[in-house]
Image (cartoon, rainbow, N blue to C red; front, side, top):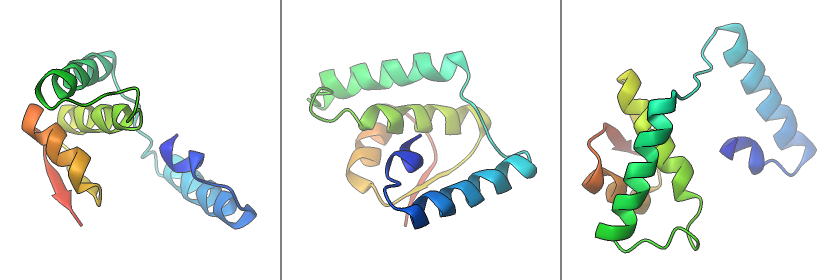
Length: 100
């Protein structure tokens, strides 16, 4: 969802569709479990109470929280350039993250 939301050009949409179709063919699309959504809600609550995040002003971090929860539940590593938000999430929730 987050990747597709940024597609505004014909070329970007084509690139997304190719990538998405590839991952479907090799069965690498992963859907979060209910417990991942619940854990993401706990992380969001922690970010608000401990880190002072205003979710109304930084709504995109909700997707990052779900990504972190999903990654931990499947034993995956999150690779990201978003150091600020994922460091804050890491302070609240233990998961594997690598900054690139």
